[in-house]
Image (cartoon, rainbow, N blue to C red; front, side, top):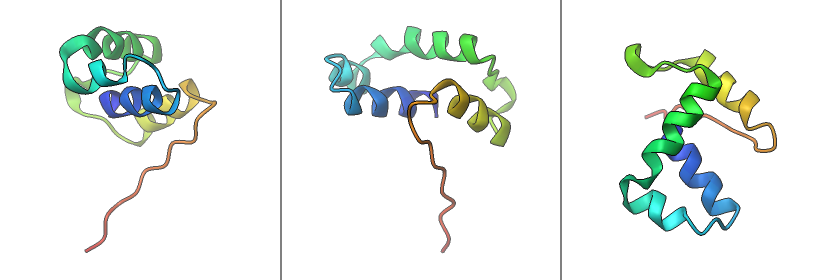
Length: 70
């Protein structure tokens, strides 16, 4: 989810790094920094509390999570 958030925000902000994030490993240090800053540890997976932490960190954006029903 961290990768997706960073890529989406870069696209919304028209960040020149968007294509680099989407196509290369340039995003890895940015993701590590985000996880360290938010205190999220993905060793055992992620859950609702982690989504809440992301939302608190990115207050200027609205993060919505959907469950696909089939």
